[in-house]
Length: 510
Image (cartoon, rainbow, N blue to C red; front, side, top):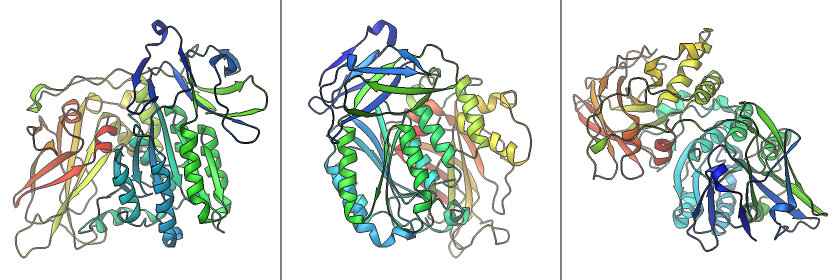
């Protein structure tokens, strides 16, 4: 296959060489709409060696010039989500085996993250051995089936990546978010030996949120399910999300077919054409896309829509040295992000990172306490405020977004909880070791701590435990910490403890 580019003066398109032979990845500005097209012949084989002139793209019914074209194999960024709920509890061996087949078909340049519906287990990696080992034995069971919440989390895991992005979801499509409650979050992680991190607010997203987000961010979704009595009614949901995004839905009759389905998805990702065009107008609205192939006897599948928006301003430069920083008082969130954050917040979505410092914060002989740590950037704060306003039936518009919400700061709160109780049902839950302060550092012990530069007033939170400690850090300096993961070190009267914010959560905060 061959590739061709239109004049770069129009597009600001960067062509980056991949690690694998013949693997080249296109990174474009958001002014270029990227469309990945799967073209098959009537017998199901991939149609190879098509050229740019063989394709036609219609944007709301009007033909657009194909400014970017490639038929080369390109690296993929994939979030693999494996249902581990009770309905598939006796099928984990077959599911893990299918995941292993999928991993074996990846190119050296492909990157994959691994999660279940409720647990984040492995950030984006090229390490095939680690992916296989995690899928085989180290993923805990899901308490319920928050399918759209888990898929939403997977979208966040690849949100900051360029090039082709996809979700590979294995599930029956029966969404049961009511099983995911804050009580689960307070019980399961304590003393539980797993590298996986329990998702926070995983039950809040709906199928509509997933369709809209995949449309806006240009992510393909591939859904795989196996026939059973409860799944039949929800198969249309999986098909809808997959087809709208340009992916595909595979409904199998038996678990023995799983490896072939996963292998077929990997094969398809490596045999797609990249088409890119510049919209005639950036009106912030949904536009219909139709991809046509002039050659007879072929079928084409691609995403069906996009939202015509430009990229927003970049984040400010990291503070030098990683030491104490000065707050950026009114660095604005872009207008498009602002509207998006309010809409998603009112729909119940959050952008947060969380972890737990599980060891004792109490004196000897006292009940053990742990700290729940939650990190939130400016977009996340706007989402939270919009959601809280909706719950209280209060109007919330862009005019209600304060400079404090917009500021490019990372807000970290640490709340003390008692490991032996369920805070929602117990009485006063205050241990002797009050939280005092916190610092952030690279998990690689080569960087200085990031000190908080502003002591914010504590939020008014309905809780029966100590009020949370809330402090602010420079968001850009946090993202610039060397290494992938970050550590939050929480100090109390009984000493200090730490917890880890995984790389994908660190990257998603904005």
